[in-house]
Amino acid sequence: MVLGLLPLSAAGQERGARPASGKGPDPCATQSQLDRLQGLTAQGDLALGSGRLASLASIRLPDDPVHREEALGWLRAWTGREVRVQGRPEPDRWGRIPARIRLMGESTSLDLAHGLVEAGLALVDPGAADAFCHPELLALEATAREQSLGVWKDDRYKPLDAERIDRLRDRVGSFVLVEGRIRSIGERTQRTYLNFGGQWAEDFTIIVPKKTWKLMAERGLDAAALKGQRVRARGILEPWQGASLTIVLPEMMERLAGERLPR
Picture: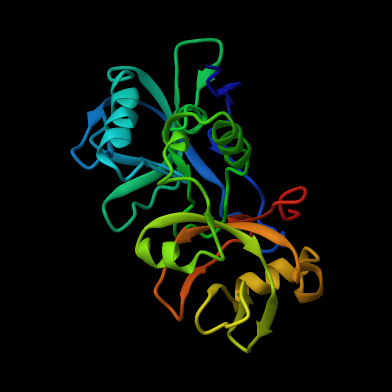
C-alpha cells in the first residue's frame, strides 16, 4: 500500500486551499509547530505531548467497531513519534484542535489523515469547517473505494442509491454517501432544494443554504448547469420529507460523469 507522503514545509504559517471567492481572511491559514504523539483517547482523539488534544481535520473514522478499531490501531502504531501539527489555535467545542498532523524525522513526512484515507480506514468529511482545506483527500478516497480497501469492502459504507428511499430512511442519522440524478431544482430565498425524485416531499433531497448556493453559482454551478446531472453527495442523512442531506461546502457534492465540481 502506498501511503500519503508529502514534502515537509519549513514555513511556520501554512495554508490549504484558498477560499473560493478569494475575499476576506483565508479560512485555511494555520499555525504550525512540533509536538509528540503521546497516544489516543477512548474517543479516538490524539493526545499530544504538549497536553493538547487534536483531531485529524477533514476526515471521520468509521462508526462500526471493527473498522474503527482497525483505524485506531493504525494510529497507535505512531505513538511516541515527533509530529508537526498544523491547525488553527482555537479548539472546537470538545476542546480539540482540528489539525493536519504529519510524522517527522525523515526526508519526507507521512500525513496521518492521508494514510488513513488511502487505507480505506477513514471517510472524507470536513464537518462544520468554514472551508474544505484538503481537497486532495477526495481523490485518495476515490482510489481506496475503487480498490475496495478497508471500509469500502463493506456494503454499509458504499454509496447509496438516491432512488432507494427505503434504504435511505434506514440510515437516517448516519454519515453516508448518496448517488443519483438531480431531477428538479427549487430555488428559494434562504435555501435551494435539489430533488432526486418526482415526489419531492417523499424522495431524496439535497438542501443547499443560500451562502453555499452563491458559491456554487460563482463556479458556474447554477440550476441550469446542475439539472439532470448525476452527482455524489456526502453528509449526515436527515429525516426531512423523505430523506435529505444539507451541503454547506460545494466540494461535498461531486459529479459522477466527469470531474468534481469546479473549484
